[in-house]
Image (tube, rainbow, N blue to C red; front, top):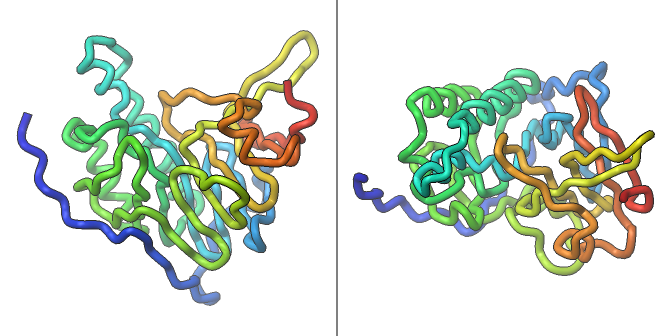
Length: 255
């Protein structure tokens, strides 16, 4: 394996200017049955593919893509179908084409490990280059990918924009305007004859935790302390990812 080049230092935090109002709006289609929530005064659309859209700022946010997870397992002798990166990037490209953001923000753990960018196939690199031609790519550092990489765009620790603070891991205690990932939330709800478990967004109107966007990522039940303790008792709701829409459910109705 070739040596990993020393990447340039990244800024610890980045503050973006608000988008001028004359910029063309994102195409969060009004006819699309997605959920809109208010977060610290910002209006966000929750796309059923697992992304959050700040329409006013033309910002598309995803979390925990874990690109090249299958190849990381293969290096350790556990063979998985090597298609996770292609599927994940195809969904991201679909969102960019649909919503036309000025920037895509990846909330950390975009790569599954520090060598993942070396294992990316040429087609995956081409997809990222094509995405970067139409919008800015902002990569927030995660625990799986704490160092800057060579995939283009800007690597930062956190991002501040208006009332929102975007980061990888949730901060302890109350955090108004925080948008984060890391925890891979999922929830189980009762249905006739059994129950259904889905990835989900979690919010209480002050903080938003995004579901993992990667094709091979698992989920942590929102009732587990790592997630539930970030909110007052049952003072949150989930938006489960469904086929073509999201489903809102208060915490009190979860199993």
